[in-house]
View 1 (spheres, rainbow, N blue to C red):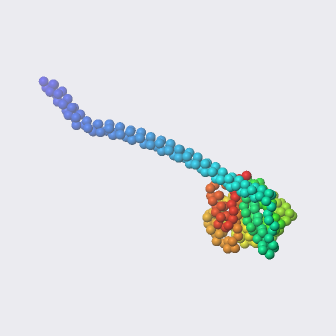
View 2 (view 1 turned 30 degrees about the vertical axis):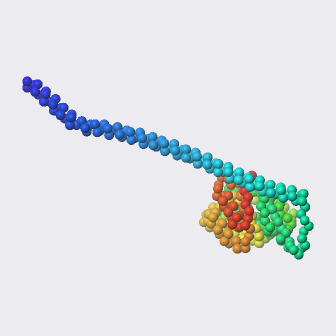
Amino acid sequence: MSAIDLFASAMGAFLIITIILMPDYRKEVIAQGDDTLLERLMAESEDALVDADERKSEAQSRREFAQQQLEELMAQASRLRNDIEEAEEQLMADHDPPPPPEPADDLSPEDQVSFRFLGLKTDERRFLFLVDLNRFLEPHADLMARTVSRTLESLRDQHEFAILAFSQQDSGPVFLRWPDDGGLVNASRRNLDGARVFLDSLAGRYVGSSPILGALEEGLASDADALVLFSDGLPNPRYNDGLDGAGIIARVSRDNRSGKEIHAVTIGDYFKYRNTIQFMETLAKANDGGFMALSR
């Protein structure tokens, strides 16, 4: 009986201890299950975030590509519109001869001047062509030369012009002038041929950055009544007195006290950079000029 009592007491003690410890055991098991669930949920959330980021990046890329295509189409439409206007005016001139000129006392020679180039219009007679030679324009050197040459072809005997090519090198801004004295020359056949030779000589000189501000200030100090800027339209603030595009426009518009026209012609892959169009077009509008963009 004593042995039976001993075993019964031990079993009772075991049961009592088991009942007391059972809640803590269940808590530990439940806690381990909660941790596993949380880890799985966190992994799924991270995967969802990565997938969302990838979809967002893909959508952004499609949006940027569509924006580039839209800007290129708008530029092409602008060129086509200008070509149509030129063709219509030429057709009207061919089939509807203008009336006889008024007496010389009514209009001065300057009032009768009208100049159209690349679809842009102006009544000024004296021009300075600013040619950007920064290294990013080197792939478009042929386009630059053709575009400036086309502009020269639009000049007539009553016009005067000069060319100022510019770039930023380690030694500072470099300005190449034609003619050498920096003055304006008559648009005679001889002078136009000399200007084309000068343009051809610029082919291997696309280096450095673009001191657009300095070139425009040189133009404002010249005898020209209209400046025509040929550039990719991406000035580096480091070489333009720390000014970005908006700052350059504000400075030039403020310093343009004589009211010179400033026309802007964007050369190259302008559709890759929205700021290119914005800077060049705003510069022209702020200074009574026209804007044109050419990619080929």
